Length: 121
Image (tube, rainbow, N blue to C red; front, side):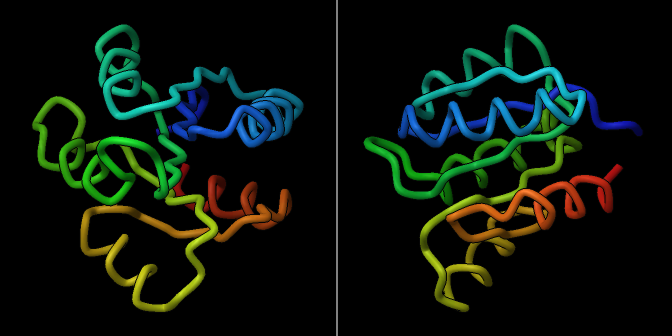
């Protein structure tokens, strides 16, 4: 399945702008969400081909949200890449155990992110 529509979930406006700009320049259609509630609303509106998920957010964190999405039969097939400042190996392992397909640390390296997205598609 080709990845065209990406949902970026992050509570940082700066990060959202950076990711949106990067993805759009690479030909992706981008929607953003700033919280878990926002993310679920966006999922219901238009199912994305990929979710880029921050971990540290108010309310439900990215690990919890990833687990909820990957366990929902409607969205279990949508790959999630964690994009987070949490750079410990234990965080990466935990993220993958919640259902994430990949894990990238901030600051996000554009080439690395594009390679990870391409590997999924």
